[in-house]
Image 1 (tube, one colour):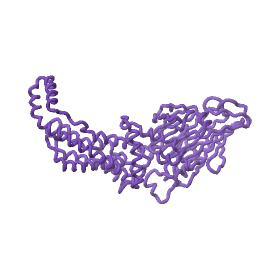
Image 2 (cartoon, rainbow, N blue to C red):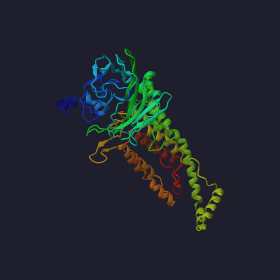
Image 3 (tube, one colour):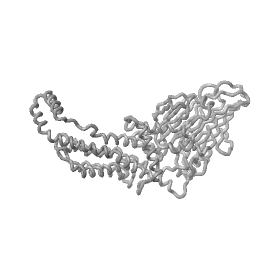
Image 4 (spheres, rainbow, N blue to C red):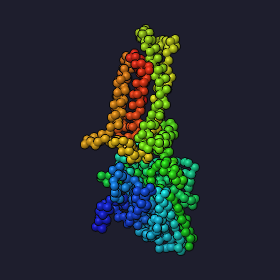
Length: 561
């Protein structure tokens, strides 16, 4: 590396912008220039670093977002305080030649000429034989990105045929450890105009293809937990020029202090017919760099095309199990949470209100089920001596015992009440839907609740610890305490098998605590509120129905999450 290059990188680091991009051969190339688009701090503002070599985008920051709450709350901001979204080791928007007619100069390695324009960036490359390539980015603040124009001009070349190119999509910077608990949600995605959706996860060392017809594409690009970078054709000519949507996985890179997770990148295949002499052909694409949010997409009609990316996030399997109606429930929960947030002005209180609404609506069903289960338990306690006699009588003949028990049950009407666990089954879809929704809920990102909880999309992090797990999260511990208190206050059954089973169930919260210890505090807030409601509800039920008879304790329902 030359002294000039070293000095350039040092100066960039000192001023807070330390792009981590690397060329394909592994050697670092200096950024040719940087440019701010929009006023920092305003919605849709961006800052980007470009290289004239390949006319490429090397890195891009969202200057209306910040990596941490602490950086967001600073009085004054340096460029290094803004969120790094694109950090591309292969240089985004670089054109690479494929087969077909050949541009006399390699556009991926040539130094393009930069021409000043008022609202963006313009690069020009002539091959010296009559063909000229132009790459223009027009900044569109309200659309959180650019309009990309690729123009091929014929100024006297007799070359005919199609110029086959590949356009590198942006590589998103996804800090390691910032992906969602349980399954990384980063992916490459494409949708067609008829609503067909294709997506693939990053697979290091494996080339993949997005299985839709590129000529019908609505948009395609890369996503991480909260953000996305998409390319969308703006007219039929630009759409028909698309030939392939390849996907490869790039190592995360980053620095030792801020490593990045592997990410999927889309390679857009383009076929441009070489125009006649004196003519030009222009392809126009929209480039979106920003959050994945229904609220943001609904704010601009042009952005509504990107809503299917949220459907992909919400239908992702939870713990490797595809949840029936999971997408619909998660979508509804996000809408209800948004309504409650607009009502209360705080996402944490919105989660609490949602919990209260769900649990209170189920109280009549739960009360009826508990009453039925208690009656059934009391009846079984009275019949237990007769059942024991049958067991002794047919101790040596299991088949006869089974037939005798069937007859006994018919005679005495021994049938557990239907839906004894119905309240739990009704709340589980809510819990799983909320779990799924919070994996990618941008609207909760860096949103405070109360006290030390300043980001509902991460663990509550009461205090840092000098040992594993590195931080003390209070909410999961509070949930464990409430769950244990609820189970310990229930009498153990007199039946040995039921007694052993209930003793084992008392330790189930420890498993959940390990699984969810670092999960979003919004979900733990829901669980703590729900368990508190269970405690209140059980107190009310006990006051109305009386204490549980130990002989029928096995019929008491378990606390609901």
